[in-house]
Length: 139
Image (cartoon, rainbow, N blue to C red; front, side, top):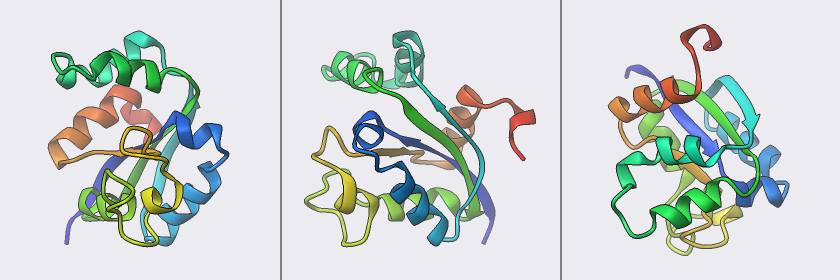
């Protein structure tokens, strides 16, 4: 198996509900290593740039508003098959369909406020990591 990196964003609903520590604990227990992390309050320009692939979709404005309402915690995770592993740890987008013990089953409110974002492919992980972190930030 290959060592990969993926991006994690702990979203505003999770930071507002003080779930950051619990989420980070699940990430670390899964065997993924946090190699870079920062807490930040995204601007509308940053959120819009990050989610630009969804710009033409009807939910884009609502997504940008949600992602800018409170701070987020952005992390780079590293480990064997990190992209797939983190998607497994996150659970299904809809917390009602998420497996027991996953982040979304434990912490998410609904499909819109689902606590975390994770890269969906290795290619997107590289792009997303570079959006938030310089190479020098990745230890």
